[in-house]
Image 1 (cartoon, one colour):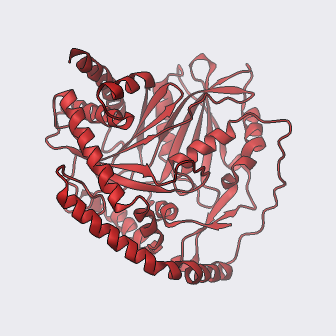
Image 2 (spheres, one colour; image 1 turned 30 degrees about the horizontal axis):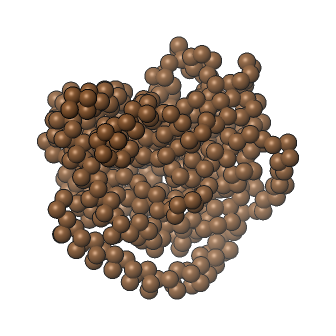
Length: 465
């Protein structure tokens, strides 16, 4: 049993029917045996689930929202409630798989069970299988998911011991309330004065740094974001599209342009969105405001549960026509954002969310959803587009039954923000995933194609110069 941190619980509080807060991990597997089936896959998960105890944890809210929920072993855990088996209806193309994933993404998870599902999808070309892990963001961020995948797909040793599972019953309301009061008194109240001093000092330093910065700095906590084509009230229906780019090409561009891999990724997204908006007849006249999740973990930390992320606000210069100039401007904006975040503190936002009362987030979000306030003037949008870049497994993963060929991932949309682009590296691949609200972006595959095209354009520009 453990209490969720504020950075975990906030994903539960801000969830609405049109903005479910789950993430998706799409694994393309090549079976090593000709008769891979659902039962074999289930048996493998049963044999390795002890490596990730959080997959048996159920999230239990505290009465009256007196504290953040608890993660408790579910005494009624049954893998059959989490494992689903479907087949693609057509030729088994990646486009068809993307459409299936979009349907899976459109429905929220059942909060009366551990907050994850596994979908086994048959019918891909060349006999491959896809596994879609749909997990609530409250239980794992990108770094925790990388560690989770690595653990679960490691070979099973004959000497590996499986501990006996003995779950207890769920606590009653009285125990939950008393535990909430105890934790507030023992931990939160004692730490609050130091928390307040630190946050106020960090905010003051950040304001001073921002005024002195020669490059405009975006503060995701305070700044008002103008609406874009991607902003407005969301519908529950999702779109999904993927592309896999050679990691070697991106590394080469990073060296040639004297930037980072993340700089190249953001430049590709900026160029791809510029191309998409031009084709849609709505060219970007200003940079696109983006928020970028950044790990707040210390180097070497291995987490299998929860979140520890800061939010970096930056600008994608989709308003600039020249690809090299666009790269340089986006790189400068990102560098300024990194410097601002270091002054503000990577752990400042996680500590603030810990002291948020559930009702302060949940009630306004439900009202926004019910009244569709994101369509009204003056709404505070979280961003115009969210972009994530997570370093995935560097070594090829395989089990006794299959080899992991490709790995895609994407996070949730927040109310008012209809586009999220997530990039995961895996071995020699850089895999882009686009998830969107169909109401805001009806054609996500065009964005994925535009990003792919932008890689070739940027390579040609580097050679020409």
